[in-house]
Image (cartoon, rainbow, N blue to C red):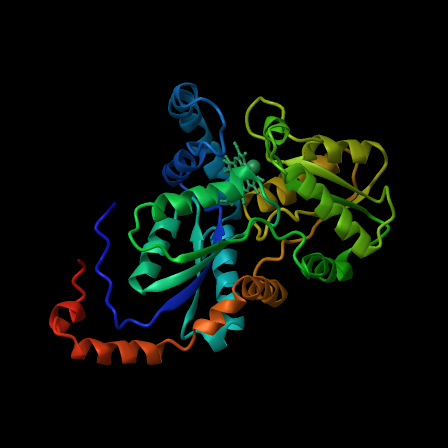
Length: 365
Ligand SMILES: C=CC1=C(C)c2cc3[nH]c(cc4nc(cc5[nH]c(cc1n2)c(C)c5CCC(=O)O)C(CCC(=O)O)=C4C)c(C)c3C=C
Ligand SMILES: [Fe+2]
Ligand SMILES: [Fe+2]
């Protein structure tokens, strides 16, 4: 266990909500992308292969080839403010904090990334410095997958294993079926969707092997699509679901988005609406892979019109939903407030103690 900073008794207790997203490179250079991919692809939740086999392949082959290619893709979507994933996650966090402003004296809203910056470990340590005694972690993945959600849990608990005084902890495993989520998507999309066009849901894929081993992601993606189609009043056959972003040679969940939308075009479907309800905010996978690469594939295969509909991003409706989701998880925390008064009372109590000087200095026994 590391030497945790001594607790200062009179510090008011805080609570926090951490929105955790995947993470993104610090800049779109091959060097920064390599650093990011090295951390991401050495996570055993992401690549379930024996380390003795995978790490030499990763460091000997993948990290010598992929960073240059991926950096090129990142450069095509990078903004003046930075990577879209980071920019949207930041703005969304500010939106949620805004909704929860009345509670800001005791409830902080922070964001963190599983890979890269702001790193979850550092965010947790900063919260500890502020005497945060209750933490709700919301991975920004509507559907659970061990490759994403459980990986956040691993990083969280890896850090907390080093702590002497653990905070009370809550963790949202998925939210595709949380009250209001499907309505949020439907209300957002309805005005811009045309029921006469085919609607394609493209979800990030995972290896099929992981689903066979018990990962519920496939079922949760299907359930999201079905419920949203019902909410939008879509006829069966007017929508379909596919999986994108395959990496490597092994079989991933299918149908694959690139092959699927070309097949749709060949079947005579000329007008396509595409949404990505597995992503909370837009990122490389939606902006480059779907809205650029797959658009080109569809049009080249005979499609006439391709519309990509952005993710929920930092919309006020998304922030409102996440704030409600968070409050539903930690409503009882309100009973602990206000704490400032009790901290004052404790400071007074300390002054009456024979060892007041030592305790007030925050010296841990
Ligand atoms: C190789 C294994 C991968 C698995 C399994 C995987 C699952 C998975 N990923 C997301 C969400 C995102 N992935 C993003 C990028 C990305 N994903 C992988 C690989 C796997 N993902 C790589 C190598 C990359 C990096 C880019 C590249 O080199 O192609 C992103 C975007 C990040 C950004 O910076 O914009 C997101 C978001 C989910 C939801 C998921 C499983 C359900
Ligand atoms: Fe991914
Ligand atoms: Fe990709």
